[in-house]
Length: 292
Image (cartoon, rainbow, N blue to C red; front, side, top):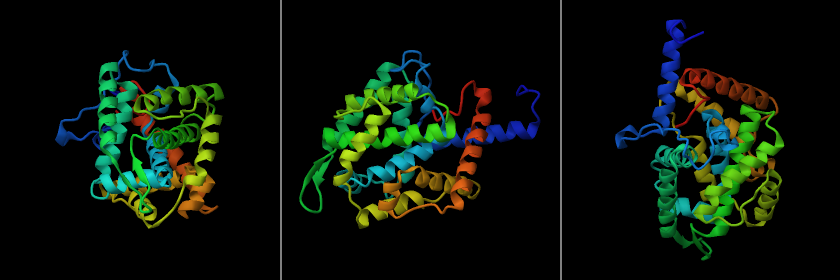
């Protein structure tokens, strides 16, 4: 069915959903417009990373899960706590992160490389001390590796659960290698090249992870942030619960947040339905659900 022959209510629903998604990821007050997909991007349009990063539902679920995991590292937590306005502008921070991913995935190579350099410059200024006096800095290759591992497993696992469960393992490894390109340019070291290496490296970080009052406060702010409208509240709550479910069991245990055995199938069914709905909304735009 073409858009012209589609019933008016369906067309209006498509327009509403697309408008809401684009307003979520683009700050119009700053003149931001959707990132245009370029054939001169860092990655080939047929690449695994274009597919994984192109679905709004899986990226939001994976992004929240990644953030919750990142905060389990004291240095990652301190960088946000000490140097970010996250507590007062959570949407702004999440929006900037999402835009950075969109630009480095889809925009022209020069624009992507400029974005990487801007982030490196910001990281160079973020440093301080943990409560126990241990120094930290955001451009520490080891810390950047942890941040990258959390994002990689979050985005990939969300995609393989809700986007393409049949994604071949070779393509999953391709995604890991491709996502490592930007991580390396930001200074992360080591950077995995396979899904199995992601798991192994996360295991090596386990002795460094902690939970304290600040961790719990950030998690509370992330998971209980107010929706932009009453109508968006149920969808947002669903995505937050799906993000908890997506985290590895050990991370759920550290945060003390789990889904009940009864609610988990309902959350997964709802997230699958949301993915299909947004893919339908963007179908007439010539691509799967796009954040950019």
